[in-house]
Length: 196
Image 1 (cartoon, rainbow, N blue to C red):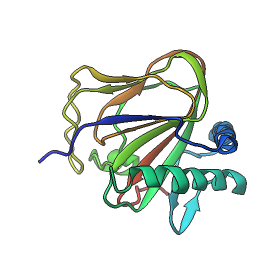
Image 2: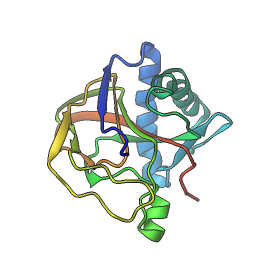
Image 3: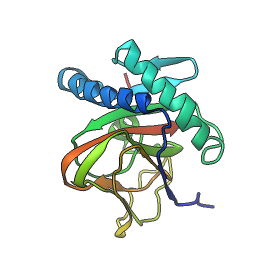
Image 4: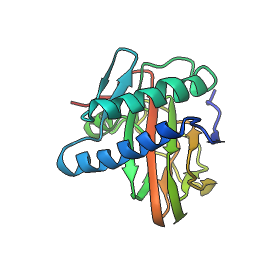
């Protein structure tokens, strides 16, 4: 039996305006780190946080994940999890892709999927830039068969303080835009994805 295919949007997700501003700063710092180091992999779980970010930035992400994201997604959308992989996007576009364990995929061509994909927009003011999610049948984890595009099913505009979650194994992309578009992507994993 296939898991349900869904996308959900929650506006005004974070009730603390100071945390929203701290998350904007995390995104800005993440962009700086990406220009000098491999800051793409950040792993957060109940017993620690692997990240190149400074202590205050890690604390902002921990507050976001443990006080806002985890209570919303668990147990409603995921039954169990081991941790949260996260990264920040600052002014980026991105072509069609599936969230997956990049290390396993590069080594074997196998799609190992998270339990859930999430995007949070702390601040955005742009034309375009919507998250587009294809309507294909989601791929299954631990397969080498890629998704077969079937046309855009969901078009979700970015908005400040908006959370978007969607089922795993779905092709998605960011449309071109003008203006400011800042987001935090977070995948919920049952097993830690492979990275160094």
